[in-house]
Image (tube, rainbow, N blue to C red):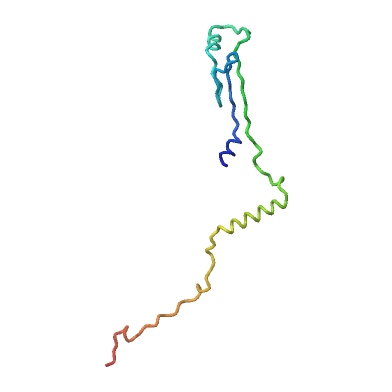
Length: 125
């Protein structure tokens, strides 16, 4: 899904160079290279002579989407209430609430009953 959103929002250009009716070069995101005939013609002529060339360049621009952001103005009040309630219930479902106090936290445990005579090694004979 992430790749679909990424590729639907990216815009790029496809540049094609034709010599006659034949596709000589195709480039994405940069200009297509000229064919050898056009390079030779531009090097030999020092003066710009307007002459029709058999070569042509075509550029295809593919625009991406810019309107993916949903604004709150286009969503109805009922939809907004549903989204808020769903988000709050989802967050409450998966949060760990460990801040609850146990009712026995405030009470101290009773003292352990020990036999004092055995503890002090005092025996009546």
